[in-house]
Image (cartoon, rainbow, N blue to C red; front, side, top):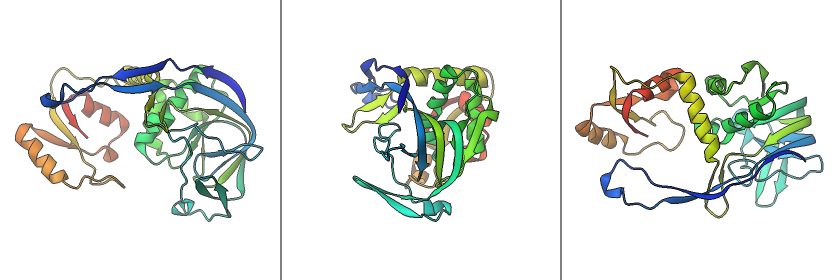
Length: 276
């Protein structure tokens, strides 16, 4: 594709461990790498499977998301019947024939994982706002992304009316698609790749918008984020962990799936210790 913007890497950096447990305070810092951010314009491309971008000559876009190679998703889980299997080195993708066509879009992405929404997809909106301040190009967001998660775009100054949702798992053809690389990646070598500036900016914008810090009354000593309602990575000994916390602190249960984004910020803003 045509490179329309490049922000070069500032190189390696380190983050020192911060921990609640005093005996671990002597841990060494962990090394990270600041990634370059590139924004490209692709002509006559297709988005297939889930976040798989196929160029006009049939090449697959790599090193654009958190994973170097876009993960393959079983689109049948979304009620989509595949038309064929796209075979690529090391991975196969179930795909449909083109079922939708769009003229132009800025690709944010599609996910049902809130963590990935925060660290992989949301930072792209920062670059959209920076490079296209008039917001005259639709923001392409998959239908797996919950509507309430879109509220995190508002502090960035994004007009939610520019969002165009697309169906998860079906192939969509674009006359022109603008793609932005991720601010957080899993490097093949194992080194963490994080654009610290982007996440500092996101944090600052959220603090300004939600004004969630509370220094007066109603503090929560300890907030424990349960995973009992999660689809994956459930904590096997959650009851044991919660029981231990209750011997140390006055602990409340945090269930973010039942709260708005603003309510979550409000609770976190008056919490002393947060376990998740």
